[in-house]
Length: 502
Ligand code: HEM
Image (cartoon, rainbow, N blue to C red; front, side):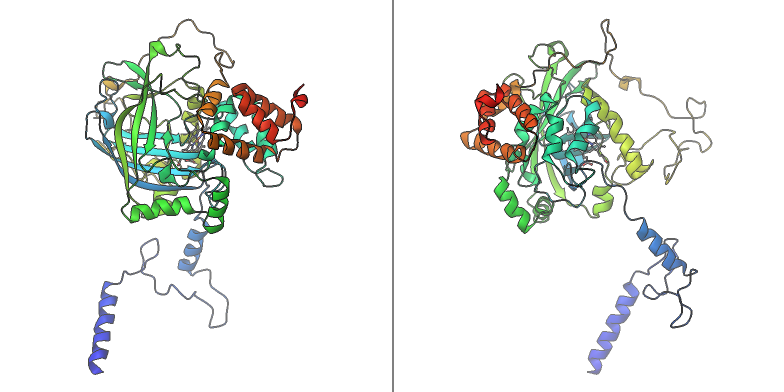
């Protein structure tokens, strides 16, 4: 017995010696983290208990604004390994040779609903990848589907308002979003894809990704080629039917987050191959659609897909808030060798992401661990809240350039590429080559009979909740223009006859 007591005593000493002393945020040891300072045993609590006050104040500020879209997401970390040298086309660091390894951070997300919403909704899924290259951070901020609803950023806030819950009922309402889409025929292609079962991925590992937009690749001679990226899941593309999604929701509606986390914990590391499609500048006008229209796919039979590497995710976040909630992706986070294209939707996004990050995360968000480039940042952008970067990196007194004392210099070989413009008129018009229905029809015709059947069921299920017959009829007209069979089947499912359209 005596031996046992002395063993326990030694054990206690061991724990005390190895315990981490709790401190306040200002580093002072905390005497008691369980009892507030009071006036006697039964009196009120004292405001001078600074530890209590600071603890509550920290808690009061734990939440930051959630993302205005893509609020719910899961993240993971890993590596991209190149399999093909693309230096003929681009200076971009991750693609300069074979077997080059670049660290990556990835965030997958749903789009419309809030941070605590279910992962079983029909919704596009975000597929954002950050490459930490020696030339700075390069982000491909894409989705699981290769096209988008609209082609001009000016429509984005209205589109999102129509898809978000009503400002009156706080419920997502097909009456609202189909009202919007009935004025937007270019959405027919995306709607057709989203209302197949692809609209509810089985899990994040089972979806493909796409940059949606074309970007410019620039090589070391300053030559430009347009490029689109695609991620192909090595786990296969797998989706849930509406019935399966309902069953999943009843069991566990956070399944996508959980299964990504668990697969990585179990060392079943998910992988994606990265493919690119390229179009020469002089060929951009040779298609029956405008390749920089985000409602259009670049057909594989006309524009070959070339595999350039593989991404493997092998680490889960250690702290969700710091590494996933606070990560900031932007389509404008580019490196030498990649430039934005003239895509109108992309041009709006270039502004929107950096702007929302300053609002959501504060002006110095690029100094946090997950967002900081792995290479050294050298410029004189300075100060504001939580500035931790040493601005006077060469001489403390010099925070400007040019200067006789500053060692900071430009690198002229990385100047932006040149673009020649013919005589142009500044205007505010829709593009002329809209071709809103062709690719929606091509996609519909490529589906199996079962896939067509579930598209019709899924669409008529949601469109059937719309009270206004004019909205339903307009949407049917769009589907009919894409493919007669498609339009007629949706019409039939909604109880319309031929005479209703006369
Ligand atoms: C997130 C704006 C179109 C993919 C966001 C966020 C904003 C935004 C404000 C929140 C970012 C944050 O808080 O960190 C826009 C605008 C668009 C647009 C204005 C059109 C003009 C698109 C398109 C795609 C896309 C076409 C896909 C190609 C994403 C993804 C995220 C996101 C993946 C989540 C990034 C993350 O995981 O942190 N978007 N978006 N967005 N957007 Fe867009």
